[in-house]
Length: 604
Image 1 (cartoon, rainbow, N blue to C red):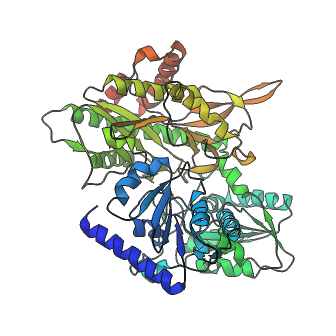
Image 2 (image 1 turned 135 degrees about the vertical axis):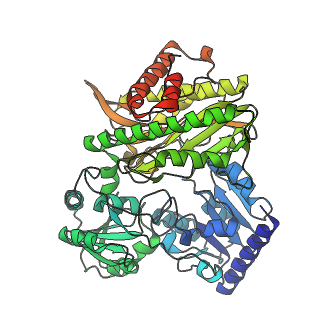
Image 3 (image 1 turned 60 degrees about the vertical axis):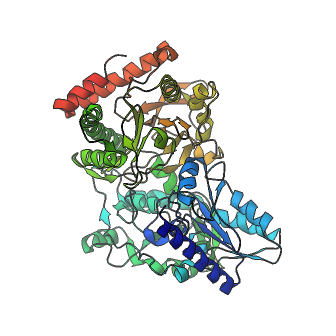
């Protein structure tokens, strides 16, 4: 970081501490969150990034009069060390994104009678309860009515104002009317006359609407209150075009100002029953519910519904994967000759994002990237969520491995793929690591398991070949993926840091990533990632069994493979995968892209 930035960061922290002193606050907590508990945040709620300089998507910032720290997990350790360098802000390492170690730290480091403040509008209800219990046991006061950012962040960005649009047939395969009916049936099942939703992907799914308020995820800022006969969508004024508003009204959906959601909760009639998901609503919204209302806490019905893609959606996703794969063929066919041309000006990592996004943009029904492209050469590949910046990125030259993790949003689906390609002559150690990662991918991709298996239980299957070599990686093996929605979607998550509760059960139609890796800080990083679809593959006397259909269509580079480490069945899987990739993509590419595809899918 520049000296100017370091001075500005120090001034911001000093300003925050002054505001804390005026308010009588001993510790201020700033989560990476917004009123919708989003992963990617509009600028208005990027306060943790503004104060600390850490840009990762997961982290909790805490400041006291004499300490400041950011708690984050292994995906961001290297990045955080770099971005926090030059400041007094400490990196506090936690074992996983679900860790509550920052709560333990507060309880251990504050004294009875002191106070902790956090803005309830951006604090998840479940986290607020854990924080309240831990602090109360130490007689530490928790204040949930304080937003010091408004006081110290003089140039805080305004809320986004982009227009909302409809996701229509043939890409929206279930009507808004039918989705609302299914939600009301789920409400009836638990005896609820009302259901409140704050999470943006649930709202976009339920109402067949999309937007551009959040980078990479096609969602818009809104809350929703569903009743037995109608529904209210709380959204910024002017964001919904008149023709869309008319169609919403025809389906019994009324619009109200975005800021009125809490007021509507406080106006619910005495004796009403409200369904809330405690893991997907903030403490502030829960506190707004009228005292006489009965609250049923259960998972949002839409969370399950949108995770289980129907066959019509699966057809659209397969088509999106074909277009995405064709774009990648064009990209790699252009990239590899550039990397091999000694006379050219060296490429840097930032150029990778430019080229790969341009290739996708030429494909039909492409909307945007699904996340910020990760292009890391050698040491930068070991930074799990690395983002290249022009002033600090690496030049791709010499020998090594280039990791490229990227994805696209299409009207018919969301993609996420990681490939690693050799530059020059990779070392034998790099080849060994690459092959071990490939073995992990194949191991889980080939697995069959009982329907309803908790997704976290599958994590060890991908790690087994890597563990056998005495190696591990610091992130989950897989995350759910939305349907032209969030690239990270629950409830299923293939990760050891997530409790294997019933919500994580694997069901037909779920799309999940498989992405094992090996990361050697300061040297290289390897990750190979495909998206897979849960399919019913067998029924036996022991029940129904699921298997994975691999959706991602792009060759896995065979040049860094240490062939002696692969078993015959693993070779057979790789060759069968490449035969499928060739058959599906060859009709969509021509010229150099077709030549590249044929070369990279030859029998290995």
